[in-house]
Image (cartoon, rainbow, N blue to C red; front, side):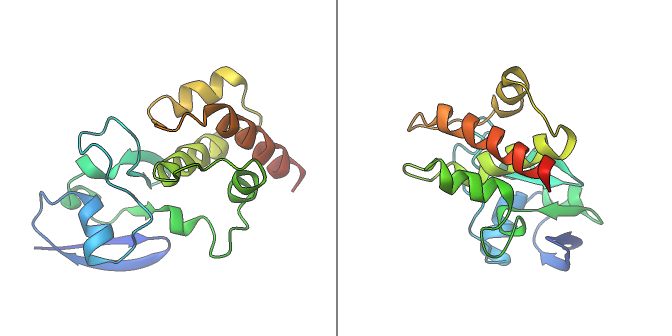
Length: 154
């Protein structure tokens, strides 16, 4: 089966069965390995991407359901780590093992796309579906606040 959609602004045509998880199309067919497989049950958030601007778990999203839609992955934030979230992530030394970070970044980007001045509660709610086994939650929250400040000043 062929499914046409956009990934990070580029139109692609996936050759996969309709029920193939979007995660495997992104990683295996398109070669974009930033989006990670974590639990396979949409519980940990490692596979978070944006579908038409909304965060979604790619491990449980059938590729056929994204036909004609716009997908954004962590690779789409910037090519040179210049996105305010990436800058703040580096500044606050957020990643420890780093495995969950692509999903964390994509959930944070979705939050900041609609809320330029999130409260602690806003951040907690937006990030609640993302698990960090290393426990870097305080650094993640600080980085999101810092990125929000950068984005407001831009």
